[in-house]
Image (cartoon, rainbow, N blue to C red; front, top):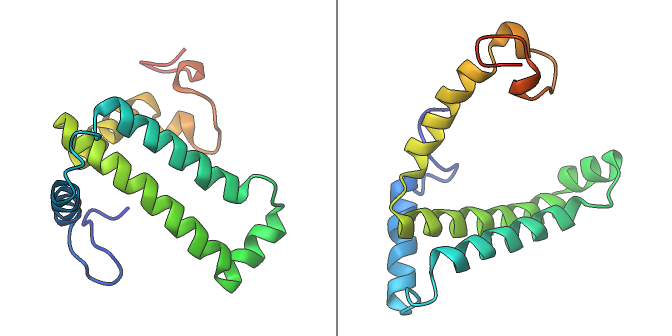
Length: 133
């Protein structure tokens, strides 16, 4: 798992991306529209658009679309929309998204011990263990 957050093209850290996004929104005076509710709804809408790109495709169609790059480009565009709205939501709410992600992984490590969770998709409440069912 990667620990450093860097883009392929060396565009900077996640914090730099969030700063750039804040400047972008401030220059356009969009703060008035960027309420937690509106941003959460925007995240949900963009996730829907991401899902729609894959919804009715079969495995081989996805593989072909990724191989020729067309599907990858559409997915990248929709994933970027999800990322940017989520980053903006967290910024507005004062949430350190990277720290929250690390904290969630830490919690899930105890909820999904390797010896009980490896190779299955059961929810933590269905696993036998200290915090499982």
